[in-house]
Amino acid sequence: MIKKMLIANRGEIAVRVLRACRDLGIQTVAIHSTADADAMHVRLADESVCVGPPPPRESYLNVPSVISAACVSGADAIHPGFGFLSENATFSHMVEEHGLTFIGPKADHIAMMGDKIMAKKTFAHLGLPIVPGSEGAATNIDKAMKMADEIGYPVLIKAACGGGGRGMKVAYSRLDFVEAYETARRETSIAFGNDNVYLEKYLVNPRHIEFQIIADRYGTSIHLGERDCSLQRRNQKIWEEAPSLVLTQAFRDDFGRKIANAVGELGYLGVGTLEFLYEDGQFYFIEMNTRIQVEHPITEVITDVDIVREQILVAGGNKLSLAQRDVQFRGHAIECRINAENSDTFLPSAGVVVNYHCPGGPGIRVDSALYDGSTVPPYYDSLIAKLIVHANDREQCMARLRRALGEYVIDGIETLIPLHLRLVDDPSVIAGNFDIHFLERTGNGAGA
Ligand code: ADP
Image (cartoon, rainbow, N blue to C red):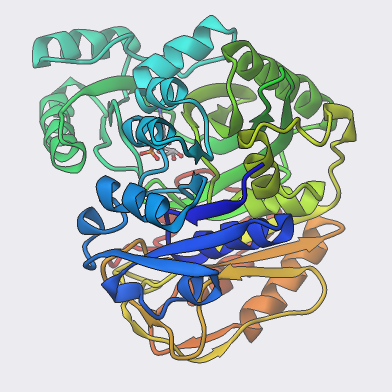
């Protein structure tokens, strides 16, 4: 049994993990950069260790510092949260080499899914529907052009080890292929340190629908249904819902079971998310994330399963505390990502938070690390809070969301609250009628 957890992250996810640890009676060690000495995750933890100066490479991504902090503080496990080191197979391997438990899947599975071409091959082999595309990397322009002709335009050029929507370019015809290919390779090289790209059929009006899975080491793997994350800006999610409005319970049961079985066959351990695009009634797998996701709370509130708790328990060697038949879906949930960004341009905004007032009342959950006087430093991801709303049906959920957004006060910095206030009153959003390009089409972020 895990007794002391080092949480290798910051912000709201560090606080979320800390809460799960406290509920389980596990001691907590926070790490922080010098910019985060007064941060909420540090204040709430039992102990804290400074791991370096503000730039992530020198602190939260500094593997020797993070592992030393765990050893010095006597932690027996490390939870990576999301982002930072959470999908770094070498890190997870090193954690285990030091005799610590990594709260995540085996290093081999992280590496397999981190290579998106390999991930698609693996799940195609296990019988899941895959987005059509190149079977290997598009290593030079001639090969890439040939692949694009075979796939058929429009095609999307993507980073093989991508993330965060970076290194992605669309080519609508042969005429713009060369430029799109070269730009994607350049951006991929800057973002990920190698320029491996691959091609996919570009779906024109899909929804993004993903399934949450969780598996233990004794052969039980279950799904917790889906989340619709179609409302995105620049291929990054900003509003998520569960369940999706386009699936029936019978379909969810059947497709969810297939996914959980595929993951079970791999011998996967822990939580994971299989992401799909959905167009004209068809699902197309695009990637698997091998960590807890930002939007996990909407699944938690409709299933009443504490996903982070289960994640820690299965990593520690326990059996899953529930079977598929125990998973019931109740009502509707929406999460709004409150980023420290201008609502029109999406430019990041740093500063000191003043007049902080958090909404409450029936059906409202706020996951954040903000407090009155807290600093939002310029060095990190702009996600500062998540507003999660739950109700018996979608209409009530939207009404509660409107109320909660109206109550939420975060002064001193710019946030996405004004954008969410627009969305909650938008007739297409109210009707549930949107795809991944909705925000671009409606001019949101056009000023960027
Ligand atoms: P990342 O790992 O960079 O987030 P993903 O493969 O998860 O990349 O894709 C992120 C988003 O990009 C998707 O949610 C979707 O909006 C868009 N996208 C990805 N693949 C395609 C595709 N083949 N056609 C159309 N849009 C796509």
